[in-house]
Length: 300
Image (cartoon, rainbow, N blue to C red; front, side):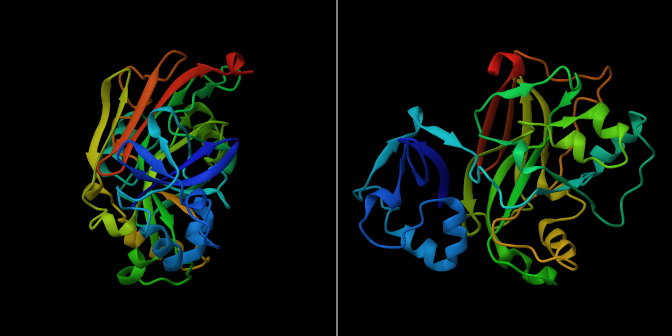
């Protein structure tokens, strides 16, 4: 299934993407226990997904909202924990970072892991609030997002994908001078609006091989990044296994799996986002983020 989160009549609802509409299961049936939000669905496990399947028939009745006029939110607007992120997870991105004199990099033996604050999350079409007082070096990073569906610790790599609920698209907006100024990436990754996410979650059963997905980023229509998840150094199964060795991954946790080459700071000369730009991030079989960059002062 392809699932969205939208605001309807002032409230947050889980929707099933159906053609050019979204079906809202919680408003479509008098049955008890139908999940109203994405986190409620994830928490309900297989039973929750089974409840939703009766609403996937295009001919089924129910509350249907046209997607064209809907206010789509991030699939999980308020994550239960910081987004777990991987850095330098594509060979070409390591090479371009080294050539930009960030630091000498060799292929990592272990994943580079950091987090983004939950307050950085915005919707798939929301404006990115450009804060010039903080920095002028706002950069783009298209990434495949993984959403954990079944909690676990010490997960074997061979069983890791069984813990995945679904996949989404993330733009890991990075404030470069702040990122490289500090010994840890958190500040440069966690600005308000620095994590556009969406436009949906595609459940894991519809993505047979998450290591075979094209991903791309465009700024003002010009392609800046284009790659495939097959080029990840640490694939999704290995990443989940490594992360879970010392901490419990919980249902609803989100993992951003790294970005390929083509980011702005490594270009010659460097390029950064500015008010008036539109940045689009796309992952095959999942969908497209399209976020305008707007002066934060104009957003109030």
